[in-house]
Length: 286
Image 1: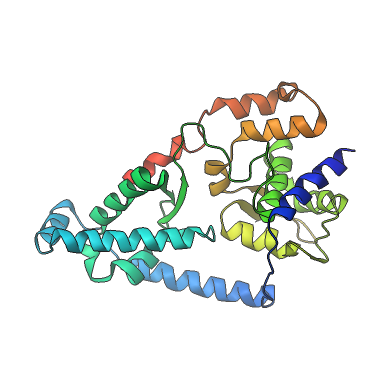
Image 2: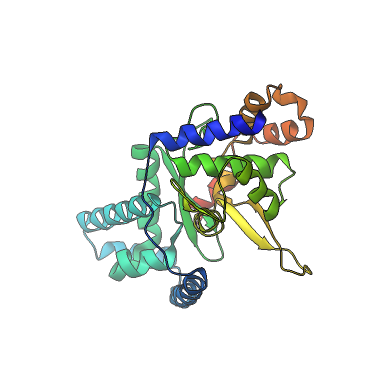
């Protein structure tokens, strides 16, 4: 019965939107390309030195307000487009493809873009990886609701799948071996070994797409033979998804009071706002 209800949650999400997934290259080839790309981008970002306050001021004096506004608008548009695929935006990409010759005023442009996101779009630009300078947009709400709502059917079928996986990880203590995830999905008639009508290559969607989007972490378990992996919540999930909402979701599925899971309930309500502890990092761009 419980498996059936979870299946209904995914099916309900799937009926709202049907997407065709394009054929992808083999996972080994895509990993090599990804590693090569990341190395190149890291090298490019390493050459960028954050301008000092005095350098920014001198740069602004050489530009008209209209030029600064235009560059800010370009940055805002670029980040909004990237956010459609939920891929974190790298500072190296911003500097190379958008900021370009305006790099001396980069901090000012980002500050203005951040203000626009908050005041116009109700979004917060957050630096989730200070080391590699990667940014995402999160809902700037007092009581954020995850984009895959546990009470209503998610508008995107993939978000329904993701939410089920995040729920399992949370309820199991934050770390789950991949075999458990695959077994649960099989019970929901989502076989990682078969192409799915809604999700395409399920294994690739979970271990590649959701990982690149920073919703999940897919980590190799040391000293295992054959090699085994485990799943954890990713940085974006920590900021966008409410654990309290997950408990409501699980309570509906199992017909239990969310407070009956005492450990998870304490964890879910220990932090009132998922993004509050990290959102402030966006004001200290490096």
